Amino acid sequence: MREKVYIETTIVSYLTAKPSKDLIIAAHQRLTQEWWKNRRSQFDSYVSQLVLREASAGDQHAASERLKVLAQLPVLEVTEESLELARELMNKKALPQKAELDALHISIATVQGMHYLLTWNCKHIANAQMQPAISATCLSSGYEPPIICTPEELMGA
Image 1: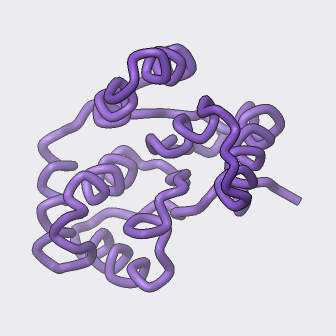
Image 2: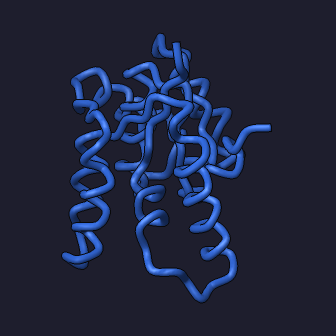
Image 3: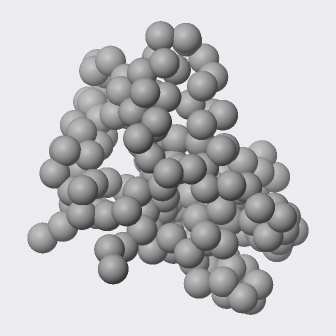
C-alpha cells in the first residue's frame, strides 16, 4: 500500500506560478516542481473541495492552470467529522483565529487518514511551534495526525 499525501493549495500554486524574482519563493517553486516530477508518483495524492475552491480564486488564467493540474487528483469531501476537528483545533487554540481554513486543511487530511499533508504554508500549517498543539488536539479527538511537511522534506533519500 502506497502512502497517501494531501496536496494543500500552496503546492499547486507554487507548481503553476510564473517563476518568482524572490530567491526563496523561486527555490520553493523549483523544489515543488522537482517533487511533482520525481516523487509524486510514489504516493497516492489527494486534494479536497477546499483546495479546489481556493485554487479557483484569483486571476482566471492562473486559476485555470491550477485547476487543470488538480483535475487528475481524487477529491476528498469536507465531512462533518473534519468540520468538527477543525472547530476543535480552533477551540484549543492550536492555530490562531485567522487560520480557520488552515485548520480545515489539517482536519480534512487527518480525518481522511492521510500519511502526509504537503504544504508551503509555514505560517500556520507547517509550523514547528504549532505542531505539538495540532498533534495533541488530533490525538485527543481520536485521530492520528498526518506528518505535515514541505516538498523539500518529502523529497526522499
